[in-house]
Length: 285
Image 1 (cartoon, rainbow, N blue to C red):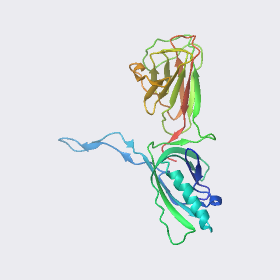
Image 2 (image 1 turned 180 degrees about the vertical axis):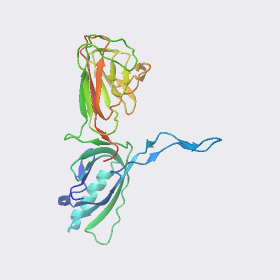
Image 3 (image 1 turned 45 degrees about the vertical axis):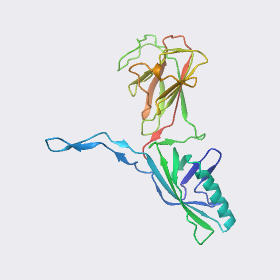
Image 4 (image 1 turned 90 degrees about the vertical axis):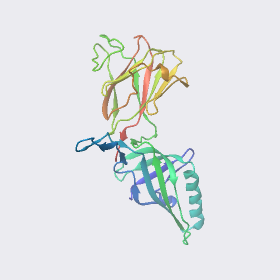
């Protein structure tokens, strides 16, 4: 695990748990970051005949465990590093950044469950067993800023046009271009979609996943509407407006690979646009 790094990032500080220059050493095994999270399924026996049935599998939360040693010839340095790590772990809600031996970088949000560190006779060393829980089973790409990717969708100008509402499969005719949103991962992810006015009854379409979302509202140039697809919430200027979701609409996801998406407004002259914020996602590394 020479090149493996495991960062815990809090509100005001961060620690690399594999940083010998700061007296932190990540020891094997590192659990929960390779392979799949636990899987749960509904299952039962067929009534009156052989065999049984099994429902669709769902992933549990991801549990991560790391063994970390703080070691230095100075007892004072060990105590100082213990205080720094304990202060960070006490935040409970942290971001974990995982750098693999091959240089790939992933991130996820974690909560601290336990972090025992028994004090032994040798005071120049202390070993932590840090247990974390990531409620989201996916791991996400981590760019240089640590933030999400952002794709911008202008209002699509379709010369041939189409009527709203519509049925899939949707065929776009006429001019203009459909935007591409690339998820370099292997798993479907839930983006945050922000609409900026002016827009009239805007609708966002992901042709790749056969999903559409329409908001029954007229957005002025100062209005900002945010759809958090993971939480399934819709807010307009900070207020809950879930009731504006049109019948038959669903929260749009970003599938693995290239997604073909666009934004449509009832007024083709609207200059509003949508921002799609997401990170590429992986169920295993």
